[in-house]
Image (cartoon, rainbow, N blue to C red; front, side):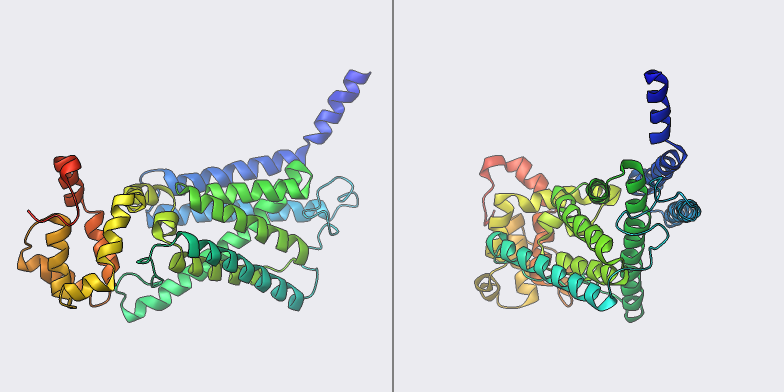
Length: 347
């Protein structure tokens, strides 16, 4: 009798609702993983649109299923309420919007303040604020770029709060466990940078906790954009990998690994200084020629100098110097010379 009762309890615990939630989570995570890591899918606009469509369809179906379950008389007692703090189906209510905005703003400022203190310790003298638009954009592209950032932030918050959170609550039955798992899944989507994984895990915990408390999505979207802009502009790329994720980040990962190396940071401390700029004649052409002489140990062609001078019309000189430090030419030169390579290199 106890065995039969135990089997029935097992079937009840992993009932239809949990099976559906597990299937939805599996499909969504698999689609996201393909969009980030599968060659031919990652970076392909058409394939990316298909991945977004799949995740959106799964999320829509999940929301409809949970709404239908919440409408049944025994919904709450059966544990299908998407957020245990509130009655099932009451996802649009909560504390006032004003308090939500104030709380989210306060937490966002606190996170940036803590990060700023950390940056005072680890940032190199040449690692200053970077422009949010590092490449020279056409005027019409700026609006598209900003719109894309807002859309990405909104999409991630919708997926995190309205799909991942409720589905995980259904699966594990405990909202704080679900918050931890949701933040973990969100963080793993930001591989391969370990620092970025840690950063997004903390942000995911904060955002999911605030959403459980206030049930307001728009403040979290704004917080997401603000924290993204802060991280991109203020956190050195040797930690953040320029916020690149997935297969695209894997291809550029050697650059960020190089920038972490002591020898690379030593070179950049010198060439990024005002004294080096003045010693090179305080001109873009003189600076570029000095980089070729001291970093690569050769005299550049006029066309090479002209290329970098044009870039310096809009790109900070330290960013130009970084490209010399992470270049294939310098990597080959260091491999050839071994311990004999030293900066400044003048052959």
